[in-house]
Image (cartoon, rainbow, N blue to C red; front, side):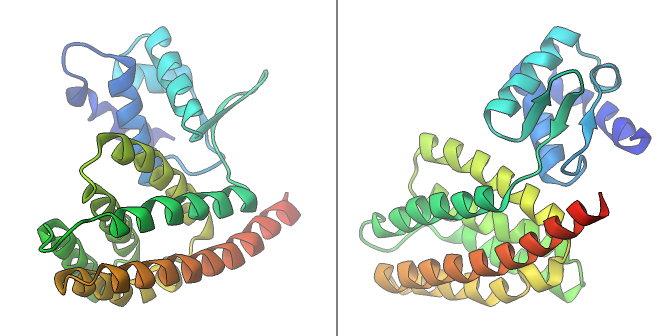
Length: 234
């Protein structure tokens, strides 16, 4: 926890002069998504508040916001913890992804589409794979789908999926097999990008739907096994 807190102290500059709960929540959300605070970690009010230089009330409000986003859970007489997802949670996340992401592609309108950000993220994934940085590949993968959703140019959809993708990262941190999990999707992301470049929305949507189905099966298989192992160890 000491290492995490020293990193948080460096985030103070991000708060500016007004340490609003929303800004604190943004910092903690990012840190949770990056695996800085793994699922099951207890978050200490005193330690985190001291590291960020914020009041207990501000921090509690930030915790409340992230609990509403399903990233944290409050346990009576024990404190606040980073949430550990159930298999059913993971399945629901993918159900939401399919509903939203496929609808975004279906509703894109006539080509050409603004694909520079998608292309950049695909290359980031390839570069990370060449370096053997599989967690970075996973990050690039999430960013690809975030940029895909952004093609809808809808702030509400972006906000909804920001929380969904942050929850998804909780599952990825538990699985802890980043290469097996993320490597196959470098080519799949490139295929979706190429279909959009070709102006073929139907093909892009079909590729995306297949991607999400295969990804769900893979994540749930590994996640169920890992959560079962942790329960036995406990």
